[in-house]
Length: 112
View 1 (spheres, rainbow, N blue to C red):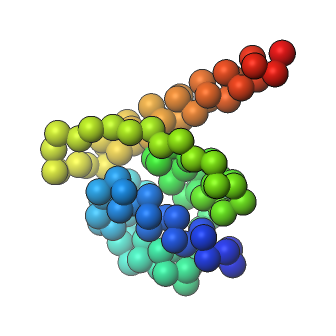
View 2: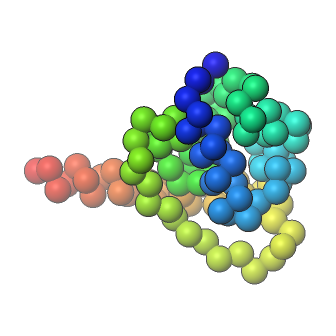
């Protein structure tokens, strides 16, 4: 189990900053809402698959989520609906993943 307090706080903070409910996040992750509560309270492990999905959804690195880095540049989206569905969040996660890959490639190009 991850023992870093930042980890649990960051999951909750990212969810709240995105104005998502635990139910919406659980639906996106394809888990029960109680698991999201346990993740945010630090009483449940996070597997690799869920870690990747959370990072993609919020456009953050695993290092940031785990508290190993404080570097985070949010990828903001404006929602026009209060009824966000899991499919909407999956689309956002795909876009975020592409944007994060582009950032990574830009950094590699700067190093050359």
